[in-house]
Image (tube, rainbow, N blue to C red; front, side, top):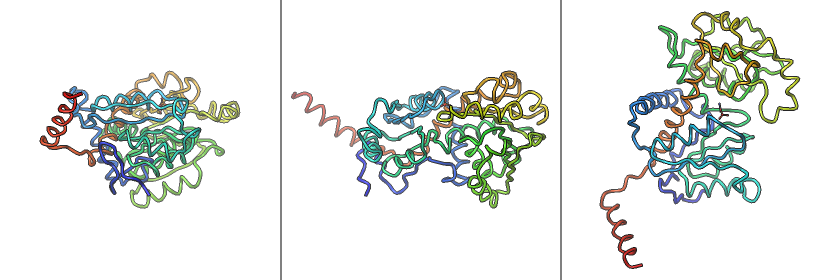
Length: 348
Ligand code: CP
């Protein structure tokens, strides 16, 4: 049984919602988060972000290194009036002297949100099971949902003339990474045509394809999984990702041999996609491996808008997941506690 939370936001409520995967959300709910992202981005540009996370904290567990996810969550919390705590497994007891369940319960008593970047999806799911505050998946072996909110928003900012999100054809070129799976699920949920173009050995498994196909039944989207790089032709967006990640170092040479040069996004591949095609990459990029520097720095690359939108996404997620739970005390309540505490302080 979950114990009542003593956190300031008292999040032990039936409507407690985690953000582990976009599949847990309807298309409309994801669209709401995207709309909130737009408003918060505009407010940030105007230096006028409402303090919707004031006095609150997000505990950030990182089992793997990160530049964008760490900076964006910490900065988002600060901009919204709160605070982000960096919790490396080297510095906390998680998995060594303390169980996942106890760690989740303890952080829930002091922080208002938990964000975890983990090696195994089971870890972030386990934290969600035992926590009484929202848990956000900041990347696991299967998914990278916060990245995908930034990616969807970036696509909206760079829509081709006259097109809507559901009109897009998105080609993910390369390995079936956690970004590939998350994009496959989100793009098909929004009715887009999603193509995974990669060598047969590294293509999206059937289980992922089944999830995408289920989305397509209601959204009207389309899924293509192929090893044929000519399939980039006519695509609105080309997306690259690393050919190897943490834990795959032993496979590095085999992977590079399999993917290169056929699946490297080059200027020639961009030209084949079409003159208005856009290039995206979640970063960090292995320069000259999955994509060339010319493409990264080229006029059709939006990779740094995409990186900036990690911050836009994290602001929206912190607000979206907590706004219903924030208790606004009355002036009388604030005055009561102030008088009581100041009364004691005057005596001690
Ligand atoms: N894209 C992404 O998650 O970047 P980091 O690994 O730097 O957080």
